[in-house]
Length: 150
Image: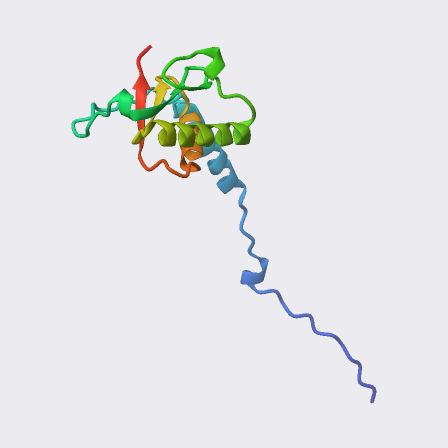
């Protein structure tokens, strides 16, 4: 009597054979993407109008070291835009020159404040860079920022 070995193949269950077709989900995703791209507005943000200050004390220009920033972002020592007072060089050289100027004027003329007069259209990063340069000063304690009317 000879015994023959036969391999029995296991039947695949319904769960093994079922695959989910994701093509309709991809179609819906692209349709939603196209819908939101077409229906959204691509506008640049407008100017922000800030409210007028109700509190605060004005400082006198005669009691402050003044730094002036014009609309192009150039920094001048003093209240005027004289080419002789222009702070030149790269950012680090300008920071050192501004800090030295603030120290010299505050110690030599006994000024109490530092006033940055910035033109209306100056970017905040320029004012921030000048404020950080004033912060490197050893004697400056109070910093004020004003909008320069042109």
